[in-house]
Image (tube, rainbow over all chains, first blue to last red; front, side):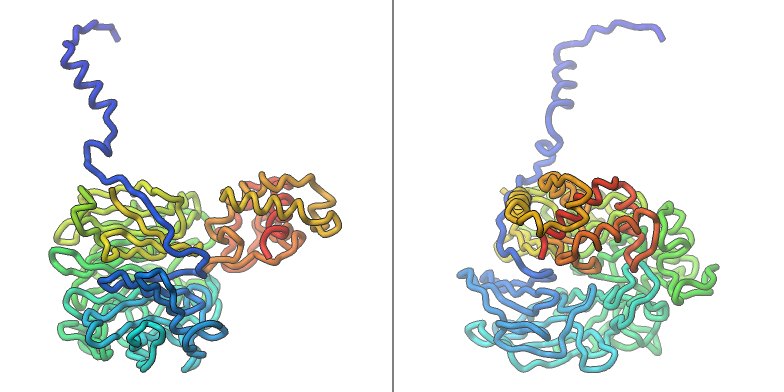
Length: 424
Length: 112
C-alpha cells in the first residue's frame, strides 16, 4: 500500500481532535452521580416502598418489615419466625433460599386506608406457600395490624431438586407493585416445577393483577379455565416489574436460564413462552422432571446453543408469545428489579428504565453486577439503547431499585446496604 | 473492603498461633491481606462480604479451614457437592494449592 501524504486544514485537525478527546458522557449530557448509604448492615434487604414524605418501608428476607421515617428513625414493624425486636411477629412467615419476605408496596390511597402490602413465604399450609399480605399501619408508624392474606396459594419450592440453585425456595418471584391503573401486580416464579408456568391454575410463573382486597382485577383477560387473577403466564422467575411512564404498560425483568435474561412488555392474557416440561418441544427426559437448564445444566455451554434447545420465549410452541424487548445480549446475569427514572434532574436519562443485575458468572459469562440504563421503545417491543450506569459506589447484588419521592434512585444490595443515588 | 481487609488482618494477628486452623498452620505462610483481596475478588460476590451467604448462596461463616479447603479441592477436581457445584467448579479450577490454603485460613479466621 502506497503512502499518500495529505494536507489537512487546521479546521479538520481540530474537528478530529475534538471527536477523539471529548468524552462521550459530556456530549450526551448524562448526569454525574453521587451516593449516600441510607442503611447498612441489613440482612438481605429485598425491597423498598415510599410515601411522598420520604417514609421508606423496607423488607429483609429473613427478618421482616421495617420502616425508616423522614427523621431517620427506624421502626421494626412485622417480624418473621425466630426474630426479635419487632413490634409484632407472625410465626408462620419463614425464609429459605430465595424465599422469605420479598416485595413491599404501599397503597396509592395510603393516606386514607393506611394499607401496606408484603409478599412472603408462609407455613400456614403445608408444604408452604407464598402469600400476599395486607397490613394496616398505625398513625405513628410504630405497628402494623389487621393482617389480611389477599393471596394464599402462590407455589413455594419445598424440597431440593437436581438443578443448579436447586435448594428449597428457588425461583420464588416476589415483586409487588401498584400500577397506574390502581391494581396490584404480583410477580411469581416457576419453583423449578415444570408444570407451573403454563398451568392455568397454579399461580407460579405468572404475573397476577388484583385489587386491594385480593380479587381479580377487571380486564385481566385470562383465558377460559384460567384463574382470573392471572394477568400473564408462561414466566420463569420474574423479580422486576415497572410501568412505562407514557403508556402505563407493565414491563417485567426476568431471570434467564444460563442464557437470555429478558425485559418484556406485558399484555393482558399474554404468554411469556416459558415451558420447561420434559418430552415437549423436542426435549426428552430431564433431571427431576425439569428441563429449565438443559441440555447441559451443570457444565459450560454456548448460551446461544442453550437458547436454541430450551428457549426463554418459545415462539415455535407459542407463536403468540410476548416477545422480549431485550435479552441481555443472550446472557443470564440475574436481572432482579426495574424502575423508570423520572424528573429533569436525570438529564438525558429522564424516562429511561433502570434494571438491576445481581451478577451470575457461569460458563464464561462475565459476572455482570451492575445497573443498566435502557431506552425502551414506546411500544415495548425493542430497545433504542442500553448502557451501564457509571456507579458512584462499588457494585453489589442489586436486588431492588426504587425511585424515591426526592427524585433519587434507591438501590438495595443483598450484601446489606441501601444506597441513595443522586444525579447532579 | 479496605476496612474489612484491615479488620481481618487485625483479627488474624490477634489470634494466638495455637488457634490458627491446622490446615493453614501446617502448610502455608499466611498472607491475610492477600487472602482478603482474593476473597473479595473470587468469593464475595456470592457468599457476601462477611461470608454469611446471600440468596441461593450458602453461608461459609463459621466453617473451619480444613472443611473449606476440602470442599475447594473437591470442586477443583470437578466433583459435584451440592446444587451450586456448576458455579463453584470454575472458580476453584483457578486456585492453586496455596490459594486454597490461604482462602480457607482467611475465611475461617475472619468470619464467625
